[in-house]
Length: 163
Image 1 (tube, helix red, strand yellow):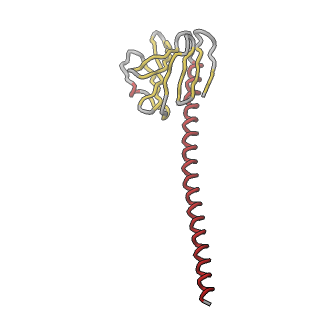
Image 2 (cartoon, helix red, strand yellow):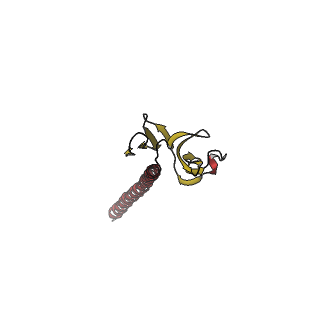
Image 3 (cartoon, rainbow, N blue to C red):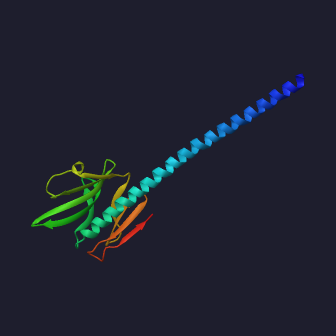
C-alpha cells in the first residue's frame, strides 16, 4: 500500500512539473510574439509615414513645377526643398524640411526673417533630406525610401520611388 501512494505522488508531481513547464513556455512565446508584433507594427507605420510624406512632396512638386521654381537648398543649415512662386510682383517660397523630428512646411516671403521653428508641422518623421541626383533630378530621402523628382525645367515631372 505504501508503494502505491508514493507512485501516485510521483505521478502527480511529474504531471504538475510538465504542466508548469508548458505554461511557462506558452507565456514566453506570447510575450515574445507580442514584442515582435509591436516591432513589425512600428516598422510598418514608419514606412507608411515615409510613403505618405513622399507622396505629399511629389503632389506638391507636380502642382507647382514651373521652370526653375523647385530647388534644393539649406534653410538655416537644414536640408530643404523649396517651391518658389510669384504672386503679383512678390516672390513667395514654400520650404519643406525636417525640424525637431517633424516634417515642416513654411510659406513666406524669403525676406520675412522667419526661421525653421515658425513652420507648420505636417507629420512626425525620423529622417528626411534632399539632394541633387544629376543636373535634372532632385532626390528626396525619407528613411529608406527615395523619391526622384525630375523637374519640368529639364523634362516632365516623373515619380520614381525606390527602397
